[in-house]
Amino acid sequence: MSEIKIVTNILKANDELTALNRKKLDEKGIYVINLMSSPGSGKTSILERIISKLKDDLKIAVIEGDLYTTMDARRIETAGVPVVQINTGGACHLDACMIRDALDHLELDGLHLLVIENVGNLVCPAEFEIGEDIKITVLSTTEGNDKPFKYPLAFEKSGAVILNKIDLLPYTNFDKPEFYSNVRTINDDTVFFETSCTKDLGLDELCVWIRNRVREKQRIN
Ligand SMILES: Nc1nc2c(ncn2[C@@H]2O[C@H](COP(=O)(O)OP(=O)(O)OP(=O)(O)O)[C@@H](O)[C@H]2O)c(=O)[nH]1
Ligand SMILES: [Mg+2]
Image (cartoon, rainbow, N blue to C red; front, side):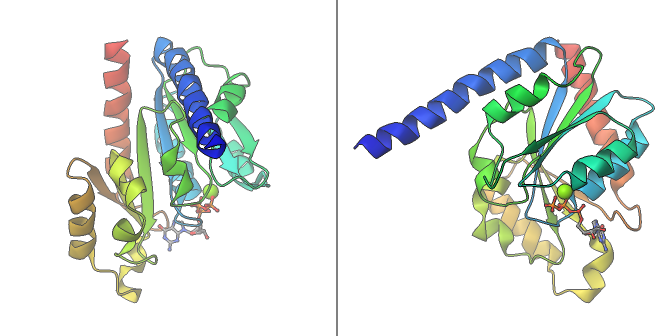
């Protein structure tokens, strides 16, 4: 009985902080992406690529979630935009409280786009709202087309799904039609992108779409 109460309170507290984060970010008209995937699917690589393509047009900042290291934050710093590192110390996902604290270290005035790279994990991050406008899940072609059915929540909650490492398709048994059909069974609304960070494929299309989402948010606010 008491255990159920504790869990309920944690989720309630997270929802309240999510609402506060969202209010703060909405007031500034900042479009917020919560980028999720299992470890190594290519979240940071995609970020590096889209930052280099978008940073002349948009003011971008990044929050990096990682268990222990600052390696990804260093990569984003090198890409040339402000970045705040959150080390979860072993926790498998980011929560709204961590984001609230990270926001205090960012200059939000004039910012157009905030990307939050969640901890590499295809399960836990999807369970927590953190103040984002959209969740985007990345899956790479080396992970298998069955993953949407095995880890449905991430795909169910994502407004966009990126299939990355399409350069490696010829070397895998990844079945694209099967993958799209599996995702559609779970989520018939999501938008699809196919990318390769090594061959620079599909990233321009992704950037056009992100730019349009940023503009939409600015029109609303
Ligand atoms: N062949 C190929 N390799 C890629 C591609 N994108 C990323 N990689 C490689 O995949 C590895 C992992 O990429 P990261 O961008 O670090 O992945 P991540 O999702 O940020 O990883 P975590 O933050 O640890 O969860 C690196 O060695 C990248 O160079 C791609 O499109 N094609
Ligand atoms: Mg990363």
